[in-house]
Length: 201
Length: 201
DNA sequence: ACGTGTAGTTTCGTTTCGATACTAGTTTTC
DNA sequence: GAAAACTAGTATCGAAACGAAACTACACGT
Image (cartoon, rainbow over all chains, first blue to last red; front, side, top):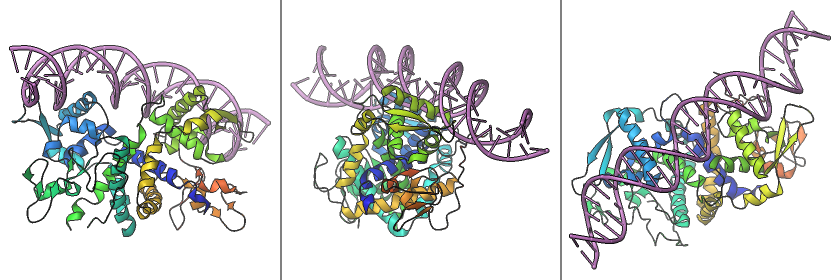
């Protein structure tokens, strides 16, 4: 097939297309794309990652901009601010009930629906391919990768879930949470050519 | 069951994350994300789709904004303007040699690389899943879907490639090109030949 | 104690983008 | 065959999103 010529670049292009298509959506809400991303992040990140700096890193922006985005969500009453006891410079943001309610209006829901309508095989292929892709991309860019604790090298499962990074036990809910300290399994995260997608269980 | 917790919404989220991560990248170039998207679009769209309106639809923005983005590429010398002979309102933009050269600096290349590093199975899974996802999403949103002529309902293969929409024969290169008149195969609800700019209010 | 580094915030100027309005060409209608 | 309705493309203007830089406050190494 001659459409192999266009394969990889087309996939990449589709990725940005979908990413962009997923962002705005409704316009029914008074939330910007950045605000939705922030709200989602704070809904999904674990305790140590729910900070402005982590969000800035996740969103590939500056801390200043991140701070502003967060502030706008504070004003809306979707986030609440908690100062850390350990480090008095640090703050943590949690979703309020209003924030959780707002999440139900997330325009990203349309994308989730679309994914759910996919053939089961394709769906599980996406579930495997996209995290792997995120890892590869982070390696190429030499940036921090984000991933969930369950996929992290610091995590050791078994009877008790344990994170070697935070040196603490993990709640079951944490396994699906984003973590700023995420490190992909199987090798170093820096330009390691031999990434092994493996079998996710 | 426990992987259902992290399944669909996480995939959707990853999609926007990757889409955003793919956009800026280098910052070495003096091109904005919108400009890159436009350049890519005009590099990849077929003859009838290389217009400001089609790009506006593709990029989910207004014609005015699209026009400005295009103008900036004209100034850079990456695009050249061709007025249509059939319809004197209509214009078509083609990449110049400088534009083609600029494409080689496309920050999206990092994403392509990352995709290429993926396991072959995952890669081909992406090649299947992402177009399907784009179609589903467009159906949900009731917007125009973009796709390549080779995947289009109007296309009939065989010895001679023929597009029933334009009522013309297709060059082999067109099969991999984006088309504004794209309609998914197999009983998707139609995307009418004349598309909706979506600027009405 | 001092310097260095980090977390968070604020301010300011640039840039981008969408709403609006406008020109010009095409199609439809009576 | 004109007028109305519609479409393609462009220009203008205001709002806001974003990044850079400066600043405060705290932590940590020496």
